[in-house]
Length: 117
Image (tube, rainbow, N blue to C red; front, side, top):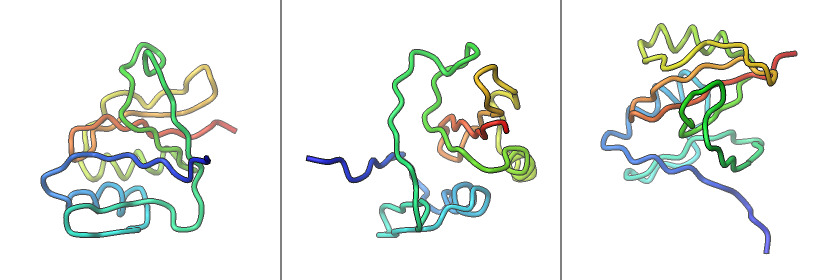
């Protein structure tokens, strides 16, 4: 037996809100749309992992989802322009990432991060 993929499911009433946040701002591809479920991801490749945590680090709550990006400050600027709520940060963490938490359109805490070079 081999795990082929892991999928995060977020309950939502208005699926169209996902495009603005996950598609337009984060640049994820719309991979599937059945009307009752939409799936965003990277159409070419994506690493998958599951993290189990007792806290989110630096005393924060455990985020619902973590998304690693190549330029955290560019995404932060787009998030602010789109008027999404920043819940934490931005912060340069002692374990080598720069990150912030944002509340997505469905109320989930999303950890946006980039590894510092």
